[in-house]
Length: 610
Ligand code: AGP
Image (cartoon, rainbow, N blue to C red; front, side):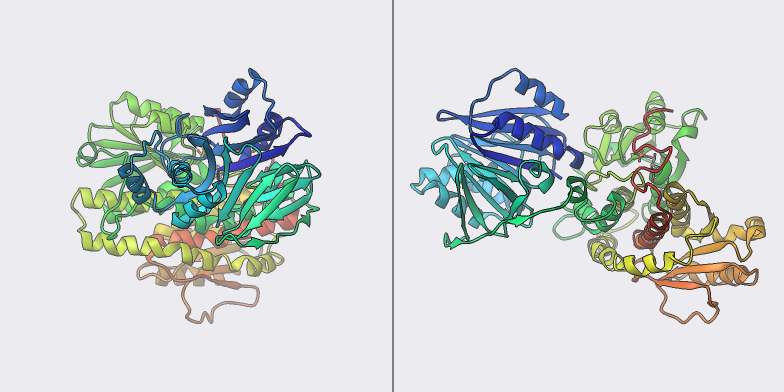
């Protein structure tokens, strides 16, 4: 999510290598950015909140003649987006940029504070510069201080460090976060992602976990964490930069489908107490929220489908009367809202005009508002009384995938939170629900294995002109979402229905030219009913794709029908699993049809018009 760049050399202007590199990392998402360079024996840091343009405006006003520098774009994790919290972070002569999370940040910070260190930011990164400086003051060399620091740090990181007292070198290290070096004669480039530095050289060195690299203008040395020298050879990379940004996936959408276990995990990370008995939403004022007796959710498109799932969760877990309404309708309907209503605006981008307008309209009634968005500084985040950020990371594909699953998991956490606040569930019940949430990333990971199977299956289905998706209960919104995904990227007409509604009209559409996708996890109430709906479709010649976690045999499946076996999961979290095959199905059908998957015709990622 964050991006790192670094440069040492005389061949180019440090300022432009750093800025251009950050620009190429911009698509990953950011809320602030900064650079540090060494001039003489002084480390100068320039930072800005918001768009990279803000940083550029500052850089344009100065001349930088330094041959060495590091830069960073930040996607806030610890500490809100602000200039103060932006990287690089400096302690004395030491300046640091960091991707990742220092998990033992509080303990280390306490330890350092007891020794007299003064912290200025809310970030976990500042402990890194503080620790390195501490070890240097303790008499260790720069290299030894960096190694000693990362000996103490737990978590994931990619880091670059400058020391104004040794102005000819950058020290870089990583664990679980990527870091690469590109080399030319007399200059070296460092980055978290290849696209940032690929225009300068395709001779790339990949740092391995726990490597320490010391980069000087015309030399580079590698050490392990015991300071033994190690050898790292460069590889010639012949990818085009766009391909690399997609981490080898053909499309952003496919990459983002595969990122869902990580995105869901990041979204729940840090939001449960250590004993798994409570949900932590730091931004909430419990007193303001405890009297809420009615929730109105407003959203568009995929975010609307996530909200429909949210309604099931909120009503089932926290027993709050919940309504969901399309934002484009909500605004003009004069909804009845009272002082105990909470209005929730859900939006990946946080900028969708329909949703933000609906939110502003709701605010006129004086109700409390909550924004659920994936972009921290977005309009909806700014306008809402409370905010819960999903941590999907930048979503580039127009068809929303990972933002959807992270929204669903936020609703799940919110339902537990409100259930506890309202005392309709006890800590024991919360613990059971929380444990299911903690386990769900791994189950999503398992369902990603369906990729190849669904690619194969799509061969038999891509030439149909219409599709119906059916689901019931908490998986009815997945039928809607599956149909939306197929429509938007393959341009095939598709409809989602609540399966019980078929007999009231849509069943007239069924014949051998109408594939029907069943979303049928093995639950106590709906599975048997879906089997009955299945029989009704079969009797009318429909062709079926049956997505189920039931391992029971399905004699009724005919020759052209297909079963997609998904892993089992608790009923309330099952939409996180059933979403995966419908995303793959839409993707692979569209891919066979050769459509522009990441930027389908007529659609925009962020719809800023009403
Ligand atoms: C989903 O795949 C869409 N492209 C679209 O429906 C989207 O969900 C909708 O425009 C809302 O966007 P938002 O979540 O950024 O508000």
